[in-house]
Image (cartoon, rainbow, N blue to C red; front, side):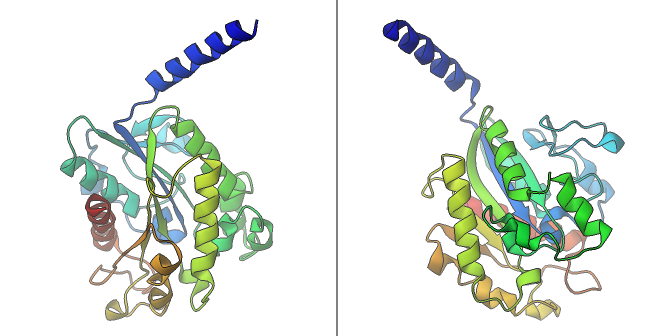
Length: 272
């Protein structure tokens, strides 16, 4: 009986291994509004790219998309009302520079306005009221009240089809000046690796700077702290925002700026 059970489990494992495509590279994306997508989606952004997919993170009737389904990665890649995200041109740039046998998939769970600790699975409840207004509360509700676990669940779904190769973060505006931020990120990164059965040596963390001081960024002082991240996480890499165009609020990148920083995330990943 025990041998029969072992045989069944072995066959199941083989079949599962065959279902997972090692050439389907998946990237988890999280953070706040710039990662979520606050820039205008323009005509040039709507052209589908072969081999670049998004795992839909929620049902969006306005785009005829269903949760947990892979679609061609045409923005928005986050929630049903979001704009252009760095994840868009990250994926486009990767497929343009990788062999034709490789596909790229992204999962984007980002919450505009959030403190980074909203993604800490042990204390997220303390950061759901950063903004009591309906716009913020709806974002959290859309992720079942727990964006971290929502991202993990989508990651596990994606692992049935492909291999998680990296994690992208763009966040910091709501934590400007908090010297503990790298430690907060380190915990979240470690939790993601553990909960998804990943190894840091195989799954780097790419973190983008907020709007740069040279562009008059309101939160530019946070970049000093963001650039300390590799001191805490050896497998973390920082993506510069210097020169990326911005919106009038000096907090969000405009469409051209989002495209540029998305390409820079990809360039950094290709260098690792």
